[in-house]
Every structure is written in C-alpha cells, then in structure tokens.
Image (cartoon, rainbow, N blue to C red; front, top):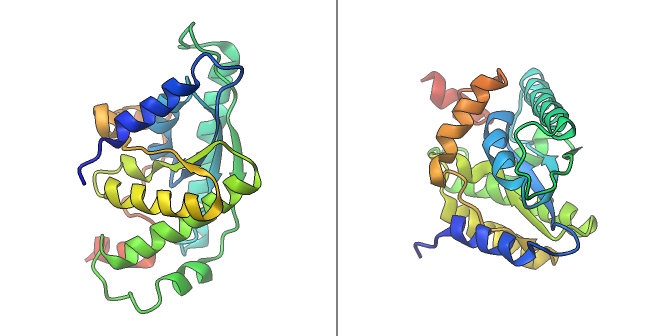
Length: 218
C-alpha cells in the first residue's frame, strides 16, 4: 500500500486550522517515552486527551510504574503550557487531559488465546493492537471526539501500516474518525529518546506482555 500516513495526518490538521476550535483528539498512549514526541507534534493542532489503556501489561508493579510515568509527563507538559515555554506564537496550546482505562490482563489473554506461540510482531501483536484500538475507538465515540489515534506508530518495531488499517476499521465500526499517523517519520523516534532524557522518563526494554518479556530475557 505504501501510504504516507504522516502526510495524511498533517493534511487533516491543515483542514481544521483557522477554525473556531481545534479538533478534539483521543490519543491512545502505550508509554510516556513514546507519548513525549507524539504530544510535541500534535499539541499545536489538537486539543488532546491521552487514553492510557494497556491490559497487555500483566505485572501490577510494572503497570503502575508506566501509568504514573505517563501522568508525570503530562503534568510536566501542562506546566510548560501554562507558563508558555517553547510555544509557537501562531498556535494556542491547550492543556492535556488524561483518562486511565481499566487494567485487566485477563482481557488481553482472552484476545490472544490460541496465539501464544506466535513470534513477536506476528498475529498475537495484531490481536493486541486491535484490542487496544477497539477500546480507544469506543471511548472516543462515547466522548464525541473528532479523532482518535495511537502513539504505537512511533516505534521502529511496530508496523505503521498494520496499525493504520486496524485503526481505520475500528473507527468505522465505532463511528469516529481515525487520525492516520506514522510518528516515527521526521525523526520522531529519535526525538522521543531526546525528550525521555530531558524529562528523565523510565524507558522499559519490552512492550509489556509476558511474551515479549520472555523473549527479551532469552
């Protein structure tokens, strides 16, 4: 297919620019490091609510560490927004809201049942992406957001085309628009590393599920 999802995202933002209000975006967040560069790119054009929904993380301590780090990052960014630090004078930056979804690893294990032996990046990951984006689409439709999207496309290990296809399907099913994205473009992943250092963010070394953790340990 070879779509330029990054360009499509910018085209959507351009269509709204100069209107009475910025579009409301529900951003599914996988972790604070990935969120950092995505939020930096989106803030000039969108009113953002971060949705932290990651039932694939099966360790309670790891889950709490990651979600609290996400909230800490958002708090720091909101402080900068309130103070006007580093803002483009041609845009009005709005504070970021956050919603923490329900954490229940049983939901994840149900979604990937029968796919336990699949390799990382295979069908099990597709099922995991769909689980998280289906719930994000549902919450976005319920909250009457203009768009929803995910930070997952910033990772070099995640297939942006697969994520965009799934996001579009789930958006149509829920009745809410999917915002195409490929946040790794234009140096997005490298920027997330830089921002992680700037905000001293915890950077995990596996995606969160027990399968990726076991592969990392091997």
